[in-house]
Length: 356
Image (cartoon, rainbow, N blue to C red; front, side, top):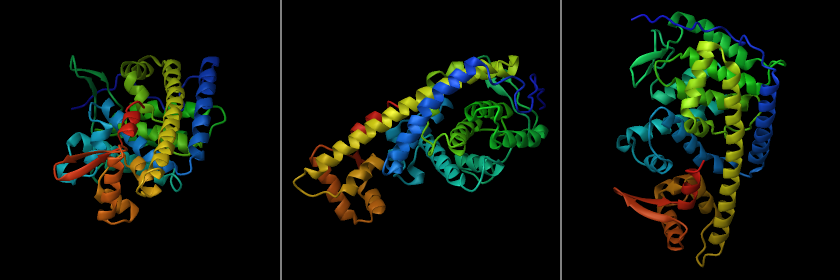
């Protein structure tokens, strides 16, 4: 079936000025919060310790936008089960987290080009067959069942993706990197290059662009929480760019999201670090010695098992089982058997992650 695009998609840069006072004020406010988040996350002695569980939180939020519903606790728990026993929703969230980690690892060697984009898509969908669509597509409003947006035809994808790559990866003195990031996000979603997973791929690319442009050192800006809270506005403003060329409202909306989420993420990381320091002090005060690396482990993995801890820490199952039991007896962890596994939960940290 052929779909006729009602709103032809122009090439980048957008045909509007990006230096209005409204936009520049929004950029300045977002940059302040991003700089503070970047500085704080770079100062953490072991940033991956705190980043690991928060990546899962972003993965849950981003997947929720696509009506894939689960929780941080469920995903962390399911990650420790054999693949055949995992719930479908948790598998999809775990794939999102894996895709984000993989793509971040590519940045030192590769800019944001098709190899990275398709690689993200392949991990998200769990297949090596993922590629740009070769057929028409439509975005349908599920309630009335009407098409609300028709992406460009497949034969335009090569030129549009090439144009997107050039715009995203070429510094432009006339447009702040934050503005290029938002513009690039709109354009990717409007191109809609895949049959499925465009939203999740686009949100990963948006955060990666902030890292590539040195606005962040790690992908710690969890923009999906903001989009989730304002989902109707997000889709309304995206469509307004397509139908009426209303760029400014969409850009301001997204910059406000960068500002709010940078502030919230920084506060969350501060709270996690405070929890970790308090946890370490309680562990040191225990009558039976538990090594500090075990305390760090239950913050990197707030849902864990003796097998997981043994693998990560290079200890025996018997040793990690004893340490986890001692932490549980001291009231620092919660133990609950699930199926044939013994799970240990860092309940205060899980509660905090759900507030992000």
